[in-house]
Picture 1 (cartoon, helix red, strand yellow):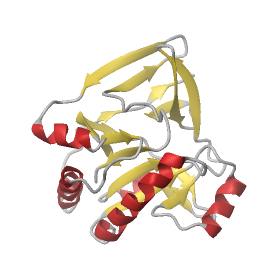
Picture 2 (tube, one colour):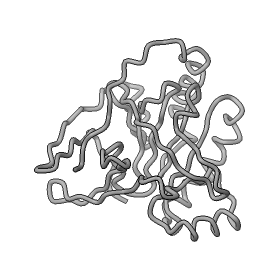
Picture 3 (cartoon, rainbow, N blue to C red):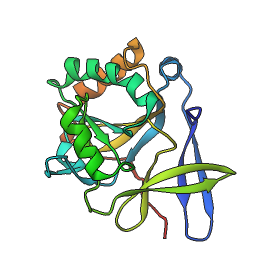
Length: 221
């Protein structure tokens, strides 16, 4: 698994790739989270809506989860590191699913038929979602001599970077990414638990607050 990125986000244009580097704020809290393989942004970044399918054919929109904290978890069926993280995600689900936390497992690499078979035979700690013909996909690109991938929407706008599996984005109740993890995160760490609890508490009142997050869409045409 690639070493977690200390900087984000990436702007992609049709002619060139330009990195917009936003350093992670250094603090005691972020240092503790870093030990858990979780990284916070200096300020939230609004996540454009995703419209995906469940294995049973239901349409799910990320906007449907406004008011809740979402772990947007990118995974694949054959990912060993994903299996390592699943027990920790299961513990989170048991502890916080009734309090306002949702875990959405997005698979955009395996064939839909394989995902449906997997969902029918395997228990996962997250709701399984895939594209289902909506036009969302992962685009692999070369950046600074390294390969990475971006989640792109039907307009070919880059929404989120997905450098490997698992990659998880922490989305607050306003629909903005406040942090991320690349590789298995230590969700049982005290600092990770405190961060999630804080976001969940904020979720009870945040729907009435102004969203000051920056838009994270970038054109890949």
